[in-house]
Image 1: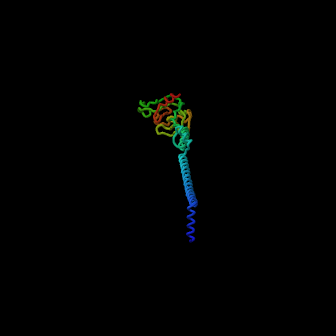
Image 2: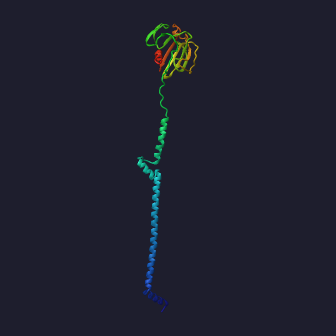
Length: 254
């Protein structure tokens, strides 16, 4: 008998006895081990995927809240107070409100028109030789005609001091071809006073501030259009460019 035949006979005897069960057990163990290893790897991968998905969701939720600019507590506060919108817009409204109030409180109030003077004085003392008559013509002795009068002529000695009738600023000092030496004073409330037929010795200059009673010049005889009259002061008043009665204006405030 050859060696091959002897080995085959012994293997057959072994497998027909206990050897069969031993081989079966080894196969089962190998199969179980392989199944365990495969299952363990699958569970680990599955757990890692779940954890990764959870972390990604958490990060996405946090980024979304941060991008909106407020967290859960601020959402609750805004909902309770009835305020909607992001924290940045709420902060902007809060900070802009005091600025608007401050701007409104610091804004200057609209300036009201200046009131007319409350104190007047007569520029000279004397008789009225020409009355204020803007609609009814009166006889003009020098011009030998009838004409309206937008002034009053007050008789006074030549050289008598002439005073400002109210507080104001000297608007002009000039010589008029018809009314002679003039001083014009601008008062508040759109009022002007004009003093003419003065001597050339004027006591004020253009731009000078004066008070009621300040001496601005003296009675003269410089008005060529009134040369036939006795020495006097030619006195006019204008309210916003329109003639007004000087005596009425002065008496109404004394």
